[in-house]
Length: 416
Image (cartoon, rainbow, N blue to C red; front, side):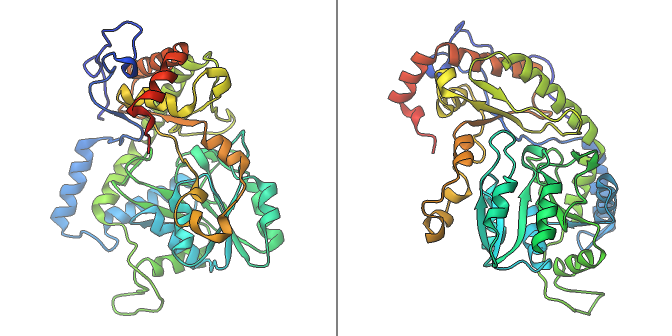
């Protein structure tokens, strides 16, 4: 497995106590990314790719895709798993397969693809606020947003933490709504001890390169609904049932064999990836736990989590600097932290220009989005890198007055 080790990846700052934003040498000679891909067993992957080339079966549900779907269904405990070219197309196909139309309630604090998967098909995303503590969709507000035009709820297991599935399921049943979960972050995570994947009408996982397990690019739909699974399989393969028999409207949403081979390789190492992330999270907690104004989101110890998102909230009043200033400090050191998912879907196009979203008030969402910072983790990150990143954060807050003045006076204040 490809993992960073040793000291060769670190460039120690020669200016003791210095920060690059204040003129010191950057702590890292090359960028340290959020979401740098986990690779897994390279030799096993190459053997699978060789087998694909030898078979000359490159697409259309060959051996690798079938194995990948079987492995995923077993992992999440569902009867069905349908592999897709990516998770966005998977969401679009699921929305059509469950007959969503009109309005669908969705959090605004999510990757924009969640909303786009609806808007692209003429379905109106109705943006809902979040719980400011958990960052999950606010169930009470969900009910207040239901109208005669509402046909479904598309909730998100943000940061790999499950939203309140039971409460959402009760709402969906009460109002006769479809319930879909965007589980892009949530592979390997549980809700009340049960693996995510089998809740609602369907769940969609991402296997994008930045996720804990990747297929280079890919997604899957998991469900226990036999009829829905059959419909989704038709829709992601042009509606074909058999060689020449098209019985349904469909598009090309299939995953190809090489992506499936990478997906299998990732699943083989998922436990190791999760353990590395868990150790990284513990290292960040040790390094930043006592820093004034910083809150690191924790995980429910009763549940399993993949620890793939190290999420900080910065309280400007206590820390002495705001989130964007801290981000500029880290970027100057070649630490490419991210302010996920700023500024919120409702503040992105096309939504911010549409009349129904003008003046939309989502106070918890906007407060959290102004404070959140996501730090690097994964197998390309280790304890030494994390110690250096934590040192940078601590120095920035210790020298907050100088940092604020520098940020306000130079190119670092342009983070667009």
